[in-house]
Amino acid sequence: MDIFEILKILATVTGMAYLVMQIFKDRYMWYVYIPSCAMLAIVMFHQKAWAFFALNVYFVIMGFRGLYLWRKEKPSSNAAASSGNRISSAFNQPIHVSRITPAILWTGVGIVALASPFLAHLLSKMGDPYPWLDAVGTLFGAVGTWWLTRSHIEQWVAWIAGNAVLMVMQMKLGNPSLVFMYAFYIVSCILGLWNWRRNAYYGDVPEDSTGEGPKA
Image 1 (tube, rainbow, N blue to C red):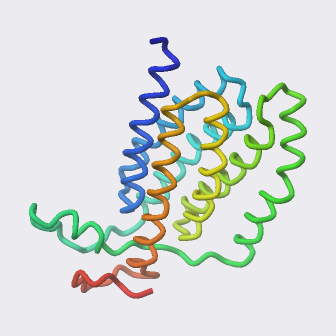
Image 2: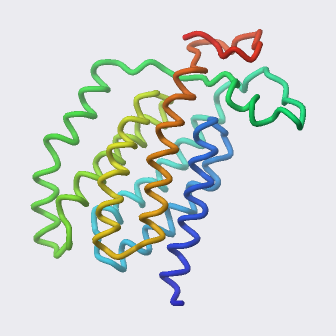
């Protein structure tokens, strides 16, 4: 097994762990996210998937920004649940989110719609084996990461679309471990969207959390 196969496996394991943490908005997820993206960047550079390589470099940078922004948030006042009820409690923890503005929403949509043809054309000139998949998946990922650092629920929709495209690209590149990872991502993102919507609150941390989930 060569070094790139090892990096794929490590990126898969850490990427899956990160996404589970993201579902519950665990602020420590960034410590897993950053090395996972760094390993994927190395693999994608080796396979000449240039946009996805650049995306993972962007992910690393945004990971440090997300770590900074989330550390400034006031933590939830909820006490940890008893050991016998931790999983149930995790799905009932308040999740602080911010409302997306029309300007941010349509800017994200415009980035994907308008930039994809230009990026795909550039990637094809650079010898990218799957320029359209690389371009569209990368742009969805860039928008999703931008919205994630701002705690917008809509980031999950961007991730579901982007991960579906990137899973197809990994199939074509012959990376079975990464195909599995992106399939896991899609299912987890659907769960994350449900959990964030169910437990979202805006503004100050709610003082009372009864396990019913805060109301937006």
